[in-house]
Image (cartoon, rainbow, N blue to C red):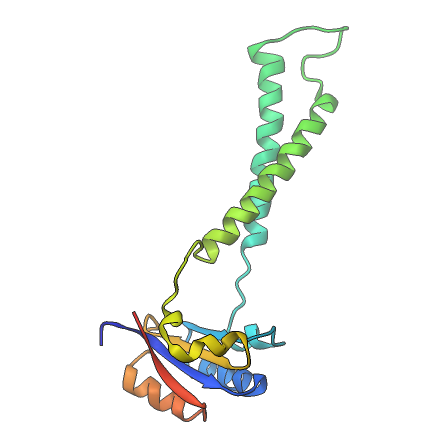
Length: 176
């Protein structure tokens, strides 16, 4: 079944989905996703989502912006085009603060947006779960748990038996 992207279980309530997600993650599945029509408290912890690297990416981008702003002004003022105005030192760092701050904010913001897009694999106009007919109810009144075939523990018959043990409304194959 090389054209199988995963298996998706459909649940009728948020509590059933959270319990199923906890059991799935406890049993060793790591490449799982949960879909619900509204935010469900505790669902991200239940599927084992603890990675939040956008803050680190934003910090690195801000630091790059800070050093870029200060370095550019220092280079222009002291090396490339030194002009002595009013007896001030060439490296007048208080005058560099505004541009340094602005580039810190600019680079931090742009890196946060870029990092979010990259970490979420965006833009992705079509995801394989949209090929499952029942999935259109994910934005209305149904809750879905998908175990992807990329998971090292994924074995289609064994994973189907495991999902059937969670008492879902239905189980559907997610085609590639």
